[in-house]
Image (cartoon, rainbow, N blue to C red; front, side, top):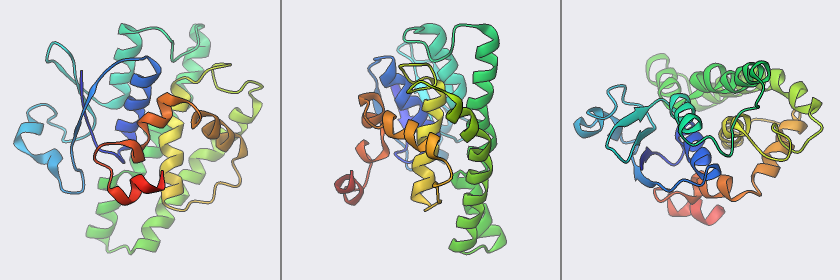
Length: 218
């Protein structure tokens, strides 16, 4: 499989983690969002939304939208599972994941931040305040749930889709210097994930398109 990715794309980061957790081999094809390579004709032919990631299957078919790709991975490669086994638990669990992917992340992705600065003239500090507000608001709903778990991860002794969604969001929060002191349970889960190869290998600083200066920080 081929994954069109950008090293700092949260959505692509999610898919990289999930592919690693499921032990699936794939080739990364970098698309530079800052340089607007997602709007090139050859990429638009695969993904008319001009978004990342795009996963091209072995048969050449292209899948888009990270959460849809993750659902496909779960259906076609069910082990190890990314969800609980009980239907009611899955629904509640999926709600937590979608809270990150659909309520927090879209307000803070690159095109929104660019619009704030380009169209409304927001300076860097204002954009950072916007970013931090939505991170904190979103994490405030997740922290008590994570704190209630007695296990190391959301699925007991292993991570699932919750961690797949959480780790990229915490990475970005730290990149924007968001104070995470109020979220110890989320930080602890993220620290445990950082010890796992699927998360380490998917990390932005480990990607082939990462600037050398960032690689040296990892």
